[in-house]
Length: 301
Length: 220
Image 1 (cartoon, each protein chain N blue to C red):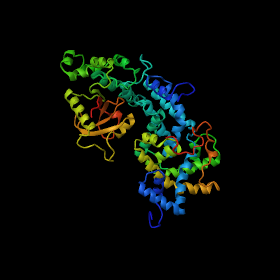
Image 2 (tube, chains in turn purple, blue):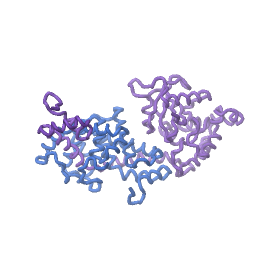
Image 3 (cartoon, chains in turn purple, cyan):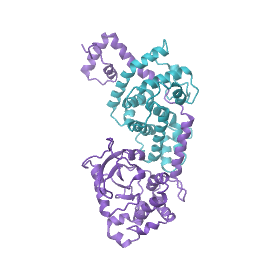
Image 4 (tube, each protein chain N blue to C red):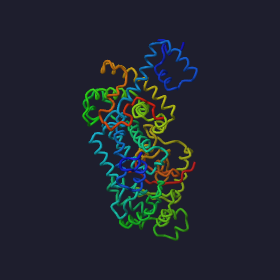
């Protein structure tokens, strides 16, 4: 006789699993045999089935409270306002800069004009991550860069190592990648995941060697070759908060001394399935606001 | 599924991704009552549910470009919202369950509509019972038994194998069986455990897409 415990009856969990067809054939037959002769276990089986019926009798939808609906509408309106810049570019989806820097500007007014537009647009360029829709704003991305660069004339731009040195840019692929003009061309060409385009935040200076090393380390994380997955004191994987706030999958994270000793390089998914985003954070549980830089690289397995 | 204004969910999402300012709002209006139900049932606390739903919808707003059209928009939206809710649980950001001790508050917040007392009491029973489950069992049970998703759709929403969904649902039902059987007997004498079709949708007559709601695995 099939019994679960000293009572001589079936485990209710097994009864429920049986109803879902989860038991192996032999075990299912034994359970059936017991059920056929045990009123108590039949009652359990009936009560398990009644749970589904009882739950299914509830409405699938519940009217959302007006206050909650209003709050969510307001949050979405804020997001939409951030998405559509007040400048000349109208009615297009958010590009790379908007998605990452506009939230930064909102949250950190002090950082806003200075660090965001100057460090990012002055020092380096970017390529829009193609979201996969043909009518996207790729062709306007270059305009965005031009607009932003024009409106926030960067004093510090003169300090930017790659600024306006066309000869030097042509001499080095890496430096060419960093040249604003070059990346604008790339954006116009509609490349979806340019080779590790990089955005510095919080006024970090990054050398070409560091760029290459970061890209290599990111690949190691993606392919699982990173020595030790980084996690915080509470055991939560580093970058969890960042990935969650950006709505992307957390691929992995590793400690690194590149750019900033003791920082954390986090790999997360990109809207482009063929790309991966790298974020350098000053600490394990820090978020977008504190990020030192971010870049996008092709995803290779 | 085309709606009164003729645009499908998928078209709305694409238009949103392409810069249409109204498309996402329309998409939200279509689905928010069901998403609200899922968030509330998954998190238990109305304030947490509001936070979770808002997190999820903002994520969906930003991630519209990642929708590939290989799943129904409904499934995609639920995946993002449910994950936002589960993330709140994982991060310990949700309030302790207080449904049992706080009936008035919960009844008021669970729905803004006038609520026949009997239905409200039943709903609290269900919510209190759900609150006894671990989150990894509650979410699949809510999706399959309450929201009418198939096992495979639920597996997609939760990102786990179908067998895992079935197994978690089975464990959840076994745990709820004595609770719901007892409350049914006490609160609705004579009704026993039978479903009560008449109580299905007094809250919102337009709400349910399967008004009789009896089949738990109807949408294969």
